[in-house]
Image 1 (cartoon, rainbow, N blue to C red):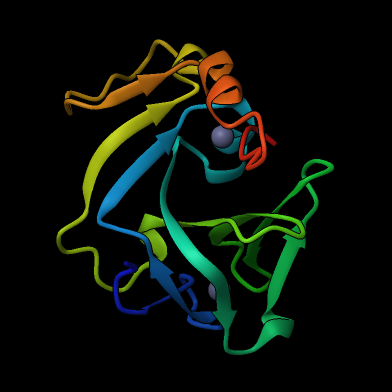
Image 2: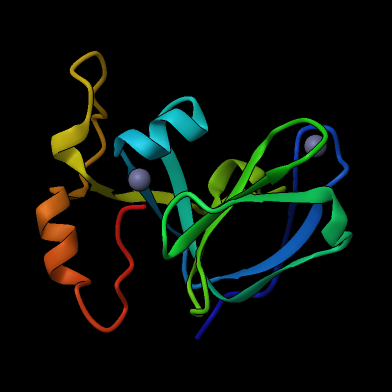
Length: 145
Ligand SMILES: [Zn+2]
Ligand SMILES: [Zn+2]
């Protein structure tokens, strides 16, 4: 059972969207691509269905791998969400949500790619990149990229 639709947007306000978080869990990805993209680890909330963007022309999308694209604001560059192409899977930036009350950091993925200069004290379920690929190998295939 998904949560109610939540609103969010970018720094400059050009992109506004609604999305349906699956729950209150935040997962953080330490992979090199996410860190480069998000200027730090990517704090993500998994959503059900598509992210509905009010003005689709304001949203850019970078096809960062064969199966995934990373969406951002064309105006201010804010990181918005990551989605698998042709699949019903997207994760939005926790920080793009207007209301983050109740969110809890519960998991860390690609922990083996985490730089040594930071560590989170939260008690989380941690997975290496290899464990992520194994867990989501098929059919979801929701891994790095
Ligand atoms: Zn913007
Ligand atoms: Zn990542």
